[in-house]
Length: 76
View (cartoon, rainbow, N blue to C red):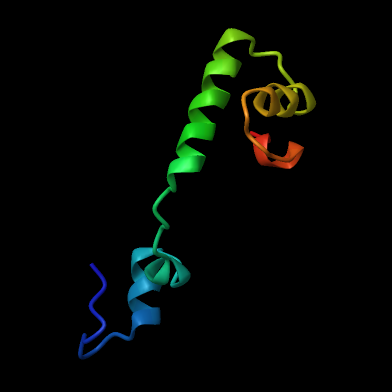
């Protein structure tokens, strides 16, 4: 959609026309590492069992399963 070699429109102008932020052009998502994937699966499993689990209890339950995470790591 955005052509950096366009003759008449700069990248900024093209982004403005398409209503896209220029910073989004340069964003490259990082691949998820295996540990985060396992952690998310455990969080999902625990949350499915009891959706009322808070961050403190979730952290404790994950520690009991062998994960070393902080409370803020499990925030939604």
